[in-house]
Structures are given as structure tokens and as C-alpha cells.
Image (tube, rainbow over all chains, first blue to last red; front, side, top):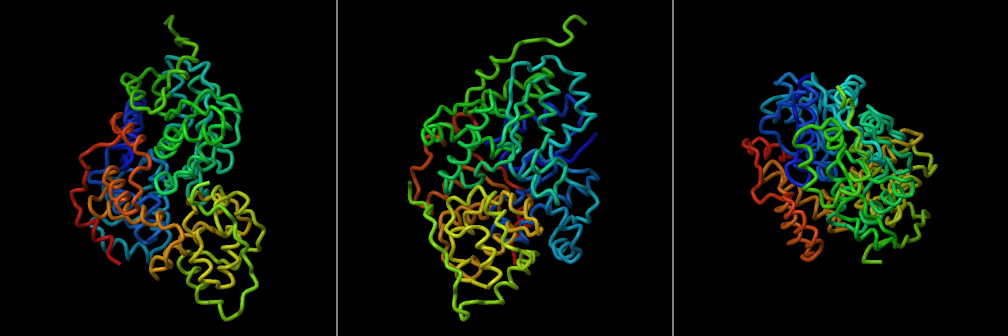
Length: 295
Length: 190
């Protein structure tokens, strides 16, 4: 399987371990990722907040380049995936918008390819079978709260690869790795997203509620699938603990890191060094059980 | 509490007819692609909104104001700037109206008409973000934060976290730039 790969801006900086683990795991699973040449920012929250046309045209430029490559797009970041997919749908359904925007693009987008999230691609039944076949270390003892956030599942009319209110793909992936995902209430609640800079106290409150609920349901880590969720959940733990008067220290992983860990993909463990929150308490909880060691 | 606007101000819907602007409702419908008149005020959007607690006008009230054409009340609210765009309202609305799009449309009108935003820093952040995209084609986080701090004068917020990120190698000094910046800049022309 071969995809046009859209890393997005965050994966070049704050989310670099998401990029590294995505690329390593894709390779281990035989999924070829070809980076979209000269890709630009998707516009994120800021474009759709201030200028609707820009929120379509910025992703459309990337879609035009990918279409020429003849490949469907994979975007690991939830926000990039959401914006690229929204633009794809709007360009396909509104011929007038498509014509207008294509006029300013060197490579027009005609709607012949589609955008998928890395979570979607890594959790198809075939891929999870492959994960199980390649399982080297079952993550037994790891009890992740699988956190989807907003933009991977909403709005379902535009995205729709998983249920918007009770998504399951991430839980299935963790179960395939031998982990024991917990049942909890905040799997698709908002972390405060882009308010991290301008109104950080909103992020402290919302992220604090998420971590607190994960703890209450017995999780020993949270698994994220978005670089902004990851940043917010890691960066605001101290402030949220203070605000709520409870200990909210909690290791946060990208799901791709745990897929890599379970399959013992070389290089994946290096990703943990760039986490702001120490992941060792969660890793120590794993009962080391090499799978099929006797063969 | 800090300087936020978490106090909910009473919102009276008894307004003199002269302040109602039907063209505003039509403009919201046109820009959002939604029909605000479909809303029957069940309040589901407000019930699920993660940011409603800090808004001055509840999300369903924004919708009602849009229906009635209460342009100034909508555009001058803090709420339109505190919507995080999480799409919970759009997912749960029993009438299929995406309030998130109505919030977007309200922000577009407010910015185009130069309405002073009740949450000035949120607008400053979005503007600096887009300037960064225009300059480089991609967002370079250190530059974005530096320019935002210059404009918002919030020099000391999160300095510790910033240093921590830098030491973890998460904030590169050199921006990654798009080669064909001219094409990207062309997309910003109205």
C-alpha cells in the first residue's frame, strides 16, 4: 500500500515523535509513505476562523499535488486530517468553489483522491491482523485511556471512519497490542485545542478534566492521536493538578509509539526521549511477555 | 479567576425592532451554508459545548440572536471568539445545523467590518498564525509565538514550558519554508 504523506507543521516540531513513530510503524507494516513535495500548512483553526475560502484553498494546493502523484493522502495530525478532508469534500461537492480555487492553483484538484487519517489507515482489520502477527511484546499491564479528541471523529458527515460519540478504532489497536484499554467518559471531549496560547486557562481546565477522568477509570496512561492534544495534555498537567487539587501526572503516548513498541520496531523507543512527561511509570507497569519467544 | 469573562451576563431577548437586522441573518446563512431558522432552541449545542462555561452568551442564544438578526449582540459577544471549533454542536444538533459554521461566519463578518473583538488575544493569535503561513507557507512555532507575544504583550506567559520544549528538541530555530511561496501567497488574495 502506498500513500501521499502529509506530515503537517506540528509534526516538524512539537509533534516530531509522532512523525518519527508514524514513519517507522508504516515501514514495519509495509505501508509506503511518499511525502507530498513542497506541501504547505493546512490553515488549521486560524484559517477557518477568519477566512473560509482560505481554509479550503490552502489544503486544496496539497490535494492538487497529491492528485498528480495519483495517491490517496494520509495525514497523522487530527487537525490537518480534518481540514484536508473538509476541503476535499467541499471541492468535490461545490463545482463553483472548485473552479474558483483551482484558478489560483498550479496543480488543480478535481476530487479524484481522498484523505485518510493515520489512525484510520493503521486500524483497518487487515492492518491490525498484521500487527498481531508481528507482535513481539504484548503490552499487558498497560491500561490506556484511548483519547480521540475532537477533530478525528467530528463532524461525522465529513469524516465518518469511526463513531463520533463512541469511537473504537484506537481501543481496537491497543487491544491488538495486548494492552487493556479502559472504559471512560472523555474519549472525544475537547482539550481546549488552539486556546493553549491565547487563553491557556481554558486548556488547563479542559485537559485537567480529561486526565482526571482517565485516572478515575483506572488508566495508567493516555493514548493520543493528535499533536495538539498531546501538547496540551502534557504541558498543562502541573497547572491542572494545582487547579483541581489532585495529582494529575499521567504519561501520554502517541498510538503509533505503542504500536511500534509492541512490534519491537527498531528506533521507536527513541521517541520517548522527547516527551515532556516521563513515560517510565507506564512502561514499568507492562508485564514483559515476549510473544512466541520459543519459536 | 483571572481576567476571563466567565460571568454570564443576563441576555435579554426583548429587543426593540429597530435593532434587528434581517440582512445579518441572510449573510450568516450565506457565509455558513446553514439555515439558522431550522433551530428550534432545544439547547443541545449549549449542553455539549466545552467552552460554554466561559462564554458571555450561550451557544443556543447566539443561534437565536442570529435568527432575529441581532447583529451587534452577536458580533460583540466574547462567545464567537471562545468557540474552540470542536464540532460537538454540529454533531449533535437534531436539526442538522452546524453552529460551528455560524460561529465561523460571525467571526468573518466581525473581522471584515472591523468590530472590536471581545477576546482580542484570540484574534491576534489567529492573525499572527496566518501571517506566518503567508510568510513561510508553513508555521514556524518559535516565530509564531514571538510575534504573538510582541502583539499581545504577554511576554512572560509559558516561558518555562517554552524552554522545556526547546530543550526536548521540539522547537527548531530554522523555519521550514515552502519553495513555491508565491503560489501560497496568491491564495491569500481576496
